[in-house]
Length: 474
Image (cartoon, rainbow, N blue to C red):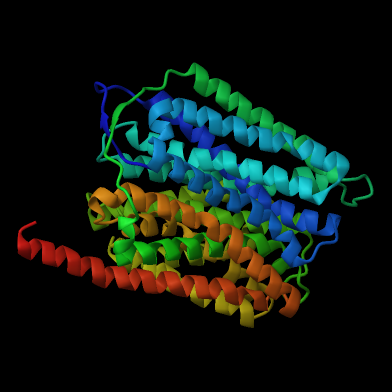
């Protein structure tokens, strides 16, 4: 959250620490995506409306806002807690808190009480908030500053790998393996899976505690009083854009299973739909690998094309091996990969321009999903994932660009905007109850329009700022 001047230790090999932290990112993504399985499961179990079922995301992502706000307030009054305690202790605390949230699913399932499930999700979200604050920053320190972006993209890609297999494996555990013998839903189906998740998190914590992670001596910068960061218009717009991005991505993912269940779409049940949900999140994984290559300014266009082609092919084969679908059922995804290639090259490695292009494509795909039926509507909604891929990193970096001494403060405000994942699905749930699932996607349409405008604004505004600074000799 708060940037520090770190005194790097002598050059050393960070391979083992980086692999260990990457394993954490994988589990983090896996458990987060399990919410998309819980929503239809709890909706049927407790006979909830769409609005009520979206409280799952409200409690989980609301914890991000509450946790970030508490951290921010402590930081501006008493200093950065993680800087004082150390990254390793911060990461371990986040893991233990997340594991405790998973364990709370046991009493929630035993008593079959929806508010207990929501409480467990809130604690789980608080744990991941601590990891959001600590783990991302720690990865950036595990090596040179020049390669920090590459490392973050790679760990985020494995985070996306977790979100890709969660619908398949997690859906199998809850909808099939631990469901009632007659196929009916029972609250106890969540007890064992989430105890397993808690156990794995604790094993990761044990591994991290045993691995010798490098410590970084830091000197805190002077804390800026007030909210001077809000004097920057692009930061305020960026906070709103991040709110819309997280809200739109989470809302679409939350409704995919319900969308595919609609008779005018595909009429699938949860067991089939979970495999297609994996394609939505798998698209984000493909896009992040491609983005790490495309936005690398040191590579020539020819090398970029070659590396991107190889990465896309390899990740596509991984996804194909995970989902329980035939090649003919997922071959449509190759069209979106090709379109993703074109969009990257049209964007010419410019973050703001690429962001606008991707957002515009998602607007078109969402409108197609709203007005069409059958496979065309299904393909449209699933294709959104691959164009979500670079949005978080691009919005984040554009929002805090040029803030100078207010960079830390601006960063904390952008992280708080993850609140969008709590609010936007609630609004879409209300519209789904009133007008149907298909028409409710008008909410994410507005979200991506805002992102499109933000990208266009940054293309003009930040370009103007850089030009002015160059002329003034700064």
